Image 1 (cartoon, one colour):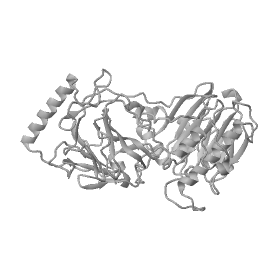
Image 2 (tube, rainbow, N blue to C red):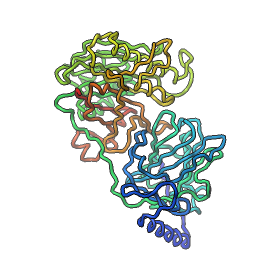
Image 3 (spheres, one colour):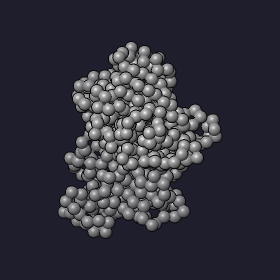
Image 4 (cartoon, rainbow, N blue to C red):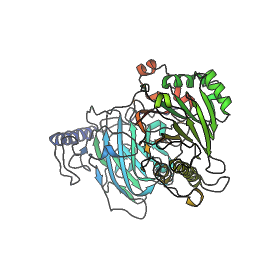
Length: 519
């Protein structure tokens, strides 16, 4: 059952007067463009935070998107810079804060690569009502919310809560020293007013160094970003859908109506399924019989199952680990695309716990799988691959990659940098023009998130597990999106024949869609 904490506190009258006076003065300075922080000057597009971020209040509305790349923070000013002030543990170096009407955004830099959601004590404190007399006494502020990232748990007004109850998300999912974090401001149990105070700690380090936290005001803003739509593919091109169907849930009659609506709204031309668990023939019977896909499609299995509106000319199993392989499919897409298309469908091992059939860690096993695909792409490019395709043949690599540990794994797929060269041979740039593959990194429809996996049943908050890479020397990405029906408006749901819980009921992964045309 979803926990909704009640706000039951009394603010002394004198404190209200002082707080409102300070807030008014801070806002006046902010509107006047005052800057004295030493962390960066004002500009017309991105005004700096207020002059006293510890004692006063800052406000920085901005259309941030949680994509794990940090580009949209480049013109924003850090709220606090504590670089070089670390101890033996994780040192917290910089913090940015921004907001829209819907979300509070944080960008955090630490002094080393960490897995944000495991094996650390990095803690976020929010004084949600800007009242030091209420909440837990931490860092000199009254924190209604305390969230420990590495333990994936926290407390809200004294009650233990999960990520789902405060709608917190972060990227990247792999280890990094920079993270983007978002909280949904519509969660009234957290956000009870227009001003908050923020603090962060880890071991012996804290930010800010002074008691009282960093003051932040949710000023009025019309900051928005252009989210993708469910627009159907262009006349000349193909729509590729990658979808992890959660242990073969497409075979469950209780959720087949959800899948039928999802497939009907997306209208894919090629479907790559992970966790289909049964044969290609069994999958074809269900998908064409119950889920609304035309019975003229071709289906094949090579590690994972792929269905195509266009003929599947050949398949090849790409070796990885002893129990995990990838599949390559050669499609006759001359009519819609103007060339053949190679689709590589992957599903490396999940999670970060150690030990498997070969006693390798999950990170090591994932690396073997991606090394195998990188070697396959090298061989295709050199004319030694199994399909004997012409130079410049378009390639798309897609699937549930389970990248939750070592950032080398997505780097290998993008750049062709093989780690296990003794087994898979030398590295080679995977695209035909000796460049890296393009990581398409689709964004959710109607939401500022690039997360592709989400479930309230896990302690892990939403993450990016599903990827599509393409040879962009040969392919143009005309359109791309991740479908999360919970984020759609009532009008968008109705227009596309969807229901709000369709993606939630179908799988813990979200459908990842890329529209491809020939470059």
